[in-house]
Figure (cartoon, rainbow, N blue to C red):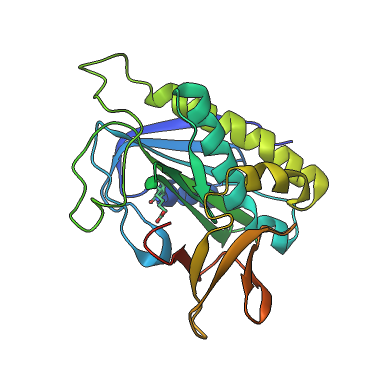
Length: 254
Ligand code: BTN
């Protein structure tokens, strides 16, 4: 069972995923967590940047050496989504939803992104870095994100109440290890499928799957035991694996 071994705090890093990777290559154990107040080269999915100013958000990554098969490893981002959703509901009076595979959304806007990266240590041992960025307090978003990004709290901590980012970060990793244990025991996502589907904002909605082999539309009906999205189309139900394929609502982000 993986436990949190240590928290490493930084005022500024290039990317907490990168820092965790460096720690892995220096032999750090699984359960090592990196947190930063800001990132100068925060990484998003599909090669995008993740803007990471100080004072408003959570930027954190955990190093893991999962003893899982390849399919279960790819479920780790879905596990992280469940964990963030649940941690937010614990720390704030909010009930966020999950946009498949791993965006956390509130009122149709994205409040968190998750990036899992895979590599091999010097000893040949594969490792995974699960990186999480949560928009907690108000901040200006770049124009292209204004319509689809949001934050959890409407007021900054200085004006309202104590900063809750630390408590949220701890809750995230506590929840993550709880769900990760279930995934590891079962060997696939099947025991978590029902809970995940309860929070799946795409469920029963029309989606557009941007498959490199050709985009198509359908209705999202749920996920399978590996965490793949099931999309009902005219040609039957298609499985969509999380990866480079992007899924969005036919009329917008959701
Ligand atoms: C996405 O594009 O939705 C994923 C964004 C992931 C951002 C987080 S912030 C902490 C960690 N470090 C990074 O460089 N990226 C992830």
